[in-house]
Length: 334
Image (cartoon, rainbow, N blue to C red; front, top):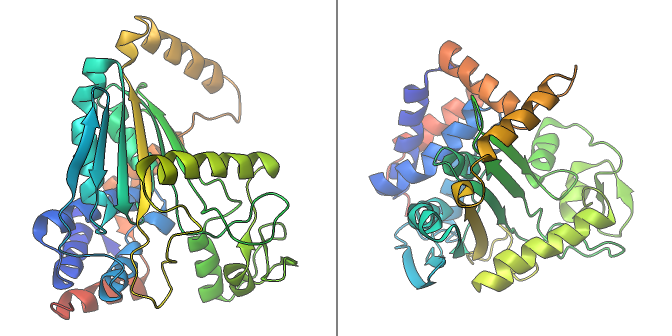
C-alpha cells in the first residue's frame, strides 16, 4: 500500500482519536512516528500505533494524562508525563529546553512517569534545527542482563546525539543492546530465526529463536562497554528523574495494567556560547568523512530515505494499513 504523508497521517490520527486521545495528543504522538516511517525506521514508525492503542486499552497509558512541569532550576526543567504518552511531555520539555539552553549555554530537561518514546534521533534533529547540540537518552523495561549476568536488568536504553550541519543535521541514534525488542517481535511474527550472538534464553544459553530471546535476555552491544553505558543511561534517566529503572518498570506486554513510568533525559548545548568556529569545524570534519569512499555521515541515510518517500510515497504493509483503518472505525475503546 502506497500512501502520501498526509494520507498516512490522517489514518494514524483517526486510529488514536478513536482510542480516546484528543486531537492535540494524537498529533504529538503521530508526528515523530511518521517522521521515523519516512526515514525508513519502520520498527519505530507507524506500526507502533496499534501497539499504543493496545497500551491504552491495557491501562499502561493514561489517555487523559496531563503532563506538567513540576520543578526547575536555572538550567534544569523537569516534566511529569502523568503516566501518559511520552510525546506530549517531550514536546513540553523541548519547548522549555530550547530557550533555556540559549540563555544558559547548556541546559537539561528530564521527563518522568513516561512511556515508550520512539526513535530518539527525531528529537535530536528537532534540537539540531534549532542550532543546538544535544545528547538524549531513554530507559525502557528490563530486557538486557548486565555483563556477566543472566537476568534482565537494563532496558535496551537508546542514546542519541545531534548537531547542526549542512545540508542536514548530523544524527547518531542507537540502542545499547545488540538488537531492539521490536526486531525480535518482527522475527517471531515472520517465523524467522535471529542471528547468533543477539540473545540468551531464560536459562542464559545462546538462542536463535526470537520467542526464546523475548522470554530471556538481549545481549548488550559492544559487550561489557555496552552494558556499562546501559547502566549510565539508567542512572541519568531513571535515577536522576525519579522514574522507574528498567528492572522496576512494568513490561509493556505484561497483563498487569501498570504503566511502566519510564524516564527520558535531554541535554542541549548552544555551540555559539562555546566557539564561533563550531559550524566551520563540523563542516570540515564532515568533509573529511565524505571524501572517503564508503564512509558516510551519521544520519545521512535517513534524510535520503525521507526525501525519497516524500517524493515517491510511503509504502506500508497491506495488513498494517487494514489494521489502522479498523482501529479508526472502531470508535472509542476506553
